[in-house]
Length: 247
Image (cartoon, rainbow, N blue to C red; front, side, top):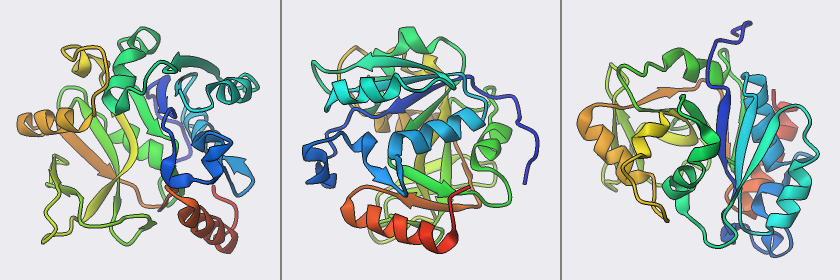
């Protein structure tokens, strides 16, 4: 395992504003980001990983039960947490990042979903991501997981990866892909400069960069847990209990 923390982004965008409809009935009373897994809210699993990788500022978007989110995040003293308010309307993945541009700055940032947990392998996942980041060759670098190394890799949708790390996004049901997106990435904020304010998905940006050869990915060597619904949460907790506390 890598001992030293490599230089990397100091700022992260944490996407936590969703309604969490698949996590109902739990999200009828709390936001998905505060759903506990192994005794810790999802948002804190993610923030702890980012902090340990050297992040100093996290921008978190809020919408569903936004007051609960703000109250919880105000208790974090180990890194600066800024709120990107989406109470008025949900902005989707791309729109949420674009909306928070004034808080994110212009240097490369992490982007992280709140429903991905993992147990580290030989190399820490975010250290592998930082080591592979090359802004001269890429604008987005996705953290990937190989099929069979996680819980929640559902269906064929995912990525093909060439020997240089360039990605091709595929949804072909006849050809299951070898890699899935873990919901964590490094990107240059400038890649969204030409997008209008409002709601939009990051996926068309992937496709544009894919055509330019500037969408890359790096696989992690640990074990991924996608916590998208109550059954997946139960499965993740059972796996963690068997394997020991997530490292």
